[in-house]
Structures are given as structure tokens and as C-alpha cells.
Amino acid sequence: MPPESSASVHILGAGPAGLAAAYTLTKKQQKVTIIERDRRVGGLAKSINYQGFILDYGPHRFFTKLKPVLELWHEVLGSEQVTIDRLTRIYYREKYFRYPIRSREVMISLGMAETLRILWSYLQTKLFPNDNPQNFAEWVTAKFGQRLFEIFFEGYTEKLWGIKCSEISTEWASQRIRGLSLSGAIRKALLGSGGGAKNMIDQFQFPRLGSGQLYDRIEANLRDHDQTVMLGAEVVKLHHNGVKVTYIVTRDRESGIETEYECDRIISSIPITILLQQMEPPPPPRVIEAARSLIFRNTILVYLFIDQLDLFPDNWLYINDPAVLVGRVTNFANWSPEMLPTNANQTPICCEYWCNFNDPIWQESEASLIDRATQELRQIKLIQNDQLNNQLNNQVTDGFVMRLPRTYPVYTGNYKEALATIQNYLDRFANLQLIGRYGAFKYNNQDHSLLMGILAAENVINPNKHNLWSVNSDSEYQEAANET
Ligand SMILES: Cc1cc2nc3c(=O)[nH]c(=O)nc-3n(C[C@H](O)[C@H](O)[C@H](O)COP(=O)(O)OP(=O)(O)OC[C@H]3O[C@@H](n4cnc5c(N)ncnc54)[C@H](O)[C@@H]3O)c2cc1C
Image (cartoon, rainbow, N blue to C red; front, top):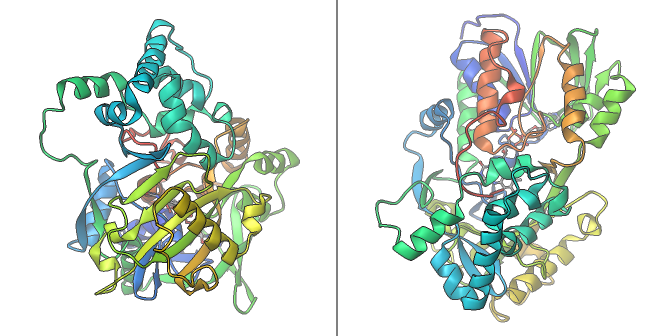
């Protein structure tokens, strides 16, 4: 491929954001070098292979209204897509409720007294509206009433973020559950929904071989175009002269050998907090302080294989009940059929736990986590006592654990001011762009990370075309759902 510019663009991290940047630049005949610390591409959206099963990191439903992202998706996957029927429910007080919420079901399942409590608390929000909610709890209560907030939002949200809903920024709520309307839902419950075709919430497109297939195919495309994809190589230093990053240092994770690369332009999707620690000379103390104040939440994934087919019909379940620590359970048997080996007689599921580095569960042994997940699934009656392989508690061959550090940027405290301080400092480096969930401290789903990558690539070709910091917060958001 004849490079438009002889100097390669260095892309740090081969998750959705970094790969979208590399893919877009490749289409523009621009040479790129992508540097990834893991042995596989795809970041948090990769798929893993385990004894013939293809497993994702929890549920990785793909949904977008963003045109450039949809184009990339179709271009890369082509006919490698399947349509998945969606069923997602919330577990609360030993009952399962469909998500998005259906009022008629709520009324029947919770009974008349609870329904009246819900309607009364909703009415109060209409009589005494809170036009200026200050946090997540107030935002949801203002929209749905106190009772629905407690039943359907509070437990799950507090498990996910590890802080009270009153400490979570309204920004998260407005991004994630915009558009749900209780009055609309009540109208539907009383008058009926009117039927109609399945909408995009009922079905979704998905890669035939798991969410990571999209990213494996981008990697193959890059290699076909003779682009450099370095795996198992961690960026450990970014040297700069005050206005430009001049060279980076990578360390091979196997051999420990360090290598220096001169840099012309850099697109980084590695955690923003780590990037700042790696800068040489270091940033001023106020910037370091701001970076220290940003919090990411970790995820533990406990995969279990259960000796029963048709365990439950959902793609995934939200576990709102505070009696158990598990927050979400994914059933991979209800995704693409080709993610299971032929004649599979086990159901692969994934239990998600969220925590901070200093929480005891982060250090818990694999056996203990498998045991915990097993007991909790029994407690919420997803599995019966005799359904688990008898050996599971002692042998990890039927279950395994993945610990993912820094998976959720936490929108709390003074994070906006801290980010502004960091952005102000980083904006002076004309050849450095930050993208992605880690990289820009944005609560992105795949589509917004892909979009940031595409826009960063366009900025390389046409400098300053897009302000990357405004992606997501300024973008139209898509679905009435509080996912991921
Ligand atoms: C449990 C879970 C469920 C999710 N469910 C969904 C869903 O249903 N739908 C959806 O759209 N999204 C979902 N997401 C979010 C989705 O995974 C992310 O939005 C997406 O992966 C972000 O892409 P990214 O490229 O910004 O970051 P990442 O995927 O985190 O990629 C960053 C990459 O940088 C690499 N890296 C880090 N440090 C270095 C270094 N020093 N040197 C070199 N490389 C480095 C990492 O190894 C990684 O590969 C989910 C996420 C999680 C954790």
C-alpha cells in the first residue's frame, strides 16, 4: 500500500476505539502502527474461546444510530451477522420483570397495594416536580417516582457503581435512561400497545461468532494491508517536549525488552490516568492530583457451565436484589447459536460482580468466586440444587474467573472539574488525541468508542475537524435502557 505519509500514526490500544481509528486510516492509505498490551485485539469487547464455547465479557449487545459506525459494522461483518431475539429481565423480590418495564406485568406481579404505592409516588412527582435534580436518585425519582426508583433502579445501580445513587451524577442517568416514560407505559398498559412490528429493542444484529468477531476481522483487514499490529506490547512511557509527544517506549510483556519509537502522530485509547503517569517529563502536580481523583470501577466475571439446557430464556438478567452481590447474569445459549459447540449439553453463563481495587472480593480466590456465584444463583433460583455439576465447587474446569481492572469510569464527585484540568493540560500536545472508554474517561458503549476512533482518524487527515471530548455527551443517545 503506498502510504500517504511515510510517518506511521501510532495507535495505543487495540480495543474498539483504537481499531476503528486504524481501520479508517487504512482506508485513507495512511500507515499505522497499533500497539496493544494484550495478546488479542478487541479490548473489553473481545470474545474468548473456552472448550469449544465462544464467550464474551458479559453481554455485548451492539446497538447504534450513528451512521459512520453502522457503515463500519456492515462493511466489516458483511454477512457474518445474525439476528438475535432480545429478552432482558430484572430480578426483584423473587420475581422477574421484563426490561424495558411493562406496566401491566408490574401491576400483576407486584399486586394492587404495591401498584397503588407506585402510582401514588409517581403522582407526587407530577404534583411537586423537581425541575433541577442534582443526582441520579433525584433524576430517576423525578421521572418515575420514588417507589419505581427503589424497585427497578436503586439496587442494580448501587451494585454497579459501589456508591449511593445520591452520589452519582445526573449525566449518567440522562445518557442511559433518557426517553423512558412512565405515563407512556401506563397508557400502554391500560390501552394496549397496539401490536405492530418488532422494534430494534426486541431484536438486534450480532456477529455470528461473538462480539469479538468484528474486531478480529478488523485486525485481519489491517494485516492484509500490511499495517503493523503489535500484540503483547505495553506502552510504558511517552516522552514530550512540552508541545509534542516525541517518542514512546513500549515493553514486550514476555521478554521485558523495551523499545523506543519516534512519533509523528498518536491516538491513545489507554487509560487516561495511566497515560498521565507515563508522561516524561511528568505533568504539573495539579494535573496528577486531578488524575488521581478519577475513579474507575473493576469487573469480575465468573463463568459457569451448567449441566442443563434451556436454563432461562433471557440474553441477560439484571439482578436488582441487594440480598446477592451478583449484578448481571448472561446466558450465552441465547445469543448466536454458533457460539456453542455442536451438541453442547451445558449452558454457559457469566455472572458479573463490580468492585474497587481495595474491596476484599477483588482478591478472592477463583474457587471462592465460583462457589459464591453458584450459591447466589441458587439463592435467586436460577439453578436448582442438583443442577450444577457436582464437582464444580472443587474443580475449576467447569468454571473460571476473569478480573477486569478499570472497566467503568465513575461519574461522581468533582470528576468534571478534574477532567477539565486534564484536558486543558493535554490540549497543548498537538500530535496527541485521546479516544475511548478508558482513554477519554467516557462511559462509552462500543458504538461511541468506534465513533471516537473514526473521528480521530478524520482529524489526522483533516486536523481539528472534530472535538473528540464532546463525543457521547453531545451525541444523540439511543435507547431507553440503563445498560452496561
Ligand atoms: C461487562 C461489560 C459489558 C459490556 N456490555 C456492552 C454492551 O452490551 N454493548 C456495548 O456496546 N458495549 C458494552 N460494553 C462496553 C464496551 O466493552 C466498551 O465500550 C468498549 O470495549 C470500549 O472500547 P475502547 O476501545 O474504548 O476500550 P477498551 O475496549 O478498554 O480497549 C482499550 C485497549 O487498550 C489496551 N491497553 C491498555 N493499556 C495499554 C497500554 N499501556 N499499552 C497498550 N495497550 C493498552 C487494552 O488492553 C485494551 O485492549 C461492556 C463492557 C463491559 C466491561
